[in-house]
Length: 219
Image (cartoon, rainbow, N blue to C red; front, top):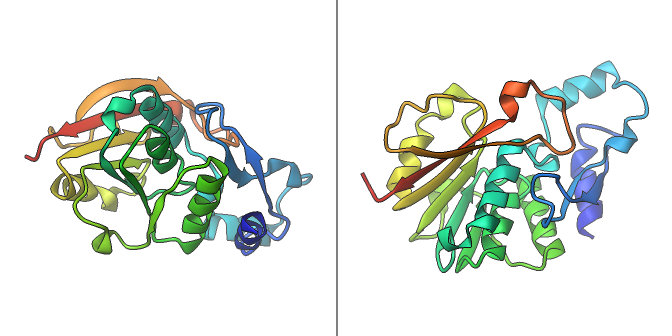
């Protein structure tokens, strides 16, 4: 049922699009319904290309920062264990799923795209975990112990999110491969890990260096 629904979502922008279950290289313990690149036997038509660029199905790819943050959480379960964790801009839900697998008291996936929430539901079921769905950041469950977010700063207009995250929870984990200087000294860099979007989009090498930041304690 889920796979059929996700295919319908994807085919709104790419008529021959479909999803397939795959395990991203950066977090192989998590299975996801993602875009199946085998459907692209030839070049995209002009209309297809315009549709993909104009309304990209972000949830159908597992971006580098999401993989890196998900794997980091699985490797450091004490960072989420027993906490109410909200994954902002959840996309495929990989980070929320990792939090649930690592022992979060509740993992909440927040995304304004209904198709993304369908993807999260499908992927949570695939991995045998429960994830709460939230379609509006401003109507999120309260209280939140930890906000997690990956690759949400691609638009400069999203910078105010950094402060919004700090105001929403006492702890924040942020992964980003696009912005080298956050301009917020409350975010302390923990590590830099290489990752690649899955399926691979052959992005510039600079976008494969993922920085993980942490905020601990309200400012």
